[in-house]
Image (cartoon, rainbow, N blue to C red; front, side):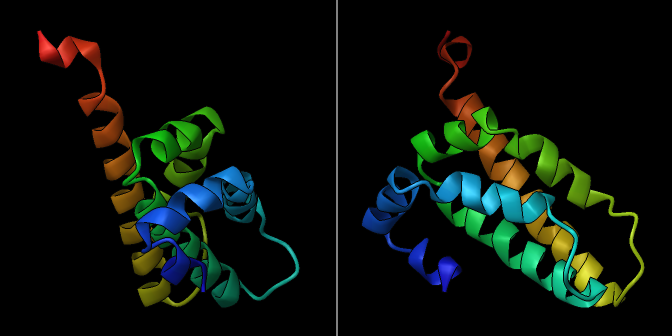
Amino acid sequence: VVERLCEDTELREDFRLLGGVPLLLSLLGRDSGRSEDKILALKSVVASAVTQLAVNDTNSAHFTQENGVYLLSKLVLPNREGDSSLVETLQRNSWRALRLISYTKCSASPLLSL
């Protein structure tokens, strides 16, 4: 559901304004209460939603300010056992989110316009 909401341009801004970014990042940092496979699947969906939200420069900056780069980086090399396809999907979605956040951050940099 979150991933679908994040596909809409207007809803991306609303999601951020309503405090959705810290909520998503808290899900990336949480590991308890579920089976390993469910945790991997949840974090993969969240990383995919972050990718959708990071298309917006303001959202991307917000993820950076809220320590999102660190949380996503931890998922790229998870120290987990579980379904290898789930781990690979999580890594792939995390890389996509990191790449987009980094690209958005770099493209907004005044040094690149020199």
